[in-house]
Length: 379
Image 1: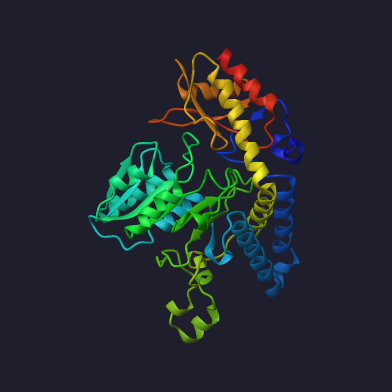
Image 2: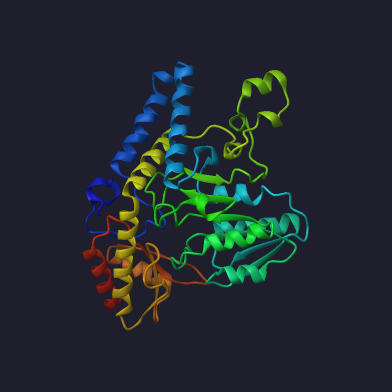
């Protein structure tokens, strides 16, 4: 399975090899067209027609929730639209009623989108943050938990190495102890098969602008139906019937019981339309697409292992489309910059895990991966 480069305007310059979908995946012409179509609807004559304008907005939001839910095998009622993964992680982290001395278990290798909100809880509420050294296992999480643990917050796919965490086991042991789980899905959805409800997670944040190949600025936040955490982001869009609230008062009985209680107000209908188109396309790629991403990532990992001064930091066989490595005598940032001069777009992971990271998607041909390995030998 291949995604032709010609379907992505960002990849029009064939002299570059783009290997950073884990940072930002390029949207296709189809996705961009869907955004422009809805933007025209909502910025043209419909803007003055009241009901039609808001109907177009609602339709775009509904299609985005539906497409996102389909992609992760969830019910649309359990998906809220967000700006990105970090937005969702903040919604989840601040949804609990924290008390000084409460504890959160997480990992030192987590992305700042997870760790910064947790450190904010530490500063604001006096919680205790227990950070584990990777690789993260269910056994390590269990050992770190105490009677004061209220939340386990980890990634589904480690952004530094591409390792897939044993999410089902972690969520099960947390549930047995009455502890909630909040998962960063930035590197999972669109990269590996992701059926969120099957993991048993309570809250799961993901984005559309990485592996899904959607627009920047739109993501999803899954909330398990029986997870009764309170939203700290409330407004007109949180209400199932705003007119009843205005007429009769009684705020709480009009707040959505599902994940939509985490949506507060107006969002971009154009971004929602683009997110829907990209999520539908990712769903259509299905299991074959995920398997092909892993196969190509493993091909690159094998080629890099053959280089004498390169140390692979990702698992073999590849678990996802992320391949991380170190180059002896060359700092990760410097290696990424030198590769860019050779027309390879990768990224580096900062300390304390200073790796070069390549993200392999379905538009990356085997010849490009072989060329990267050759460039590493020259580096």
